[in-house]
Length: 63
Image 1 (cartoon, rainbow, N blue to C red):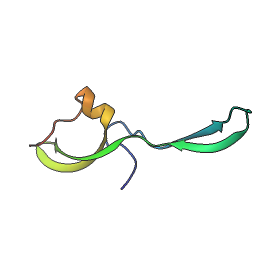
Image 2: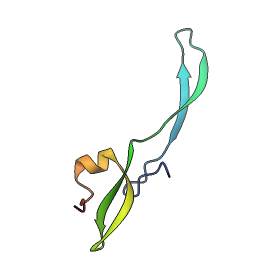
Image 3: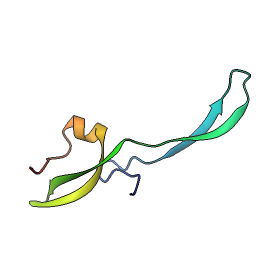
Image 4: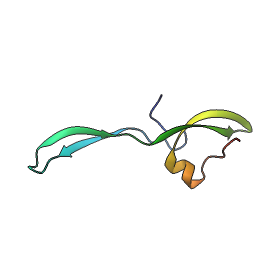
């Protein structure tokens, strides 16, 4: 599944893991993506949406 929100475009970001001794290593953060049925342009589609967009009400769920 694509780890990208179809509403806001949020996707995986990269950075450093920093240990107590201040050594750096690579790590990544993935958004919390859910595949939901939503109303898009009057029809029902399955889209990948982050939970932030779901919680904020940017997506109209199709029941």
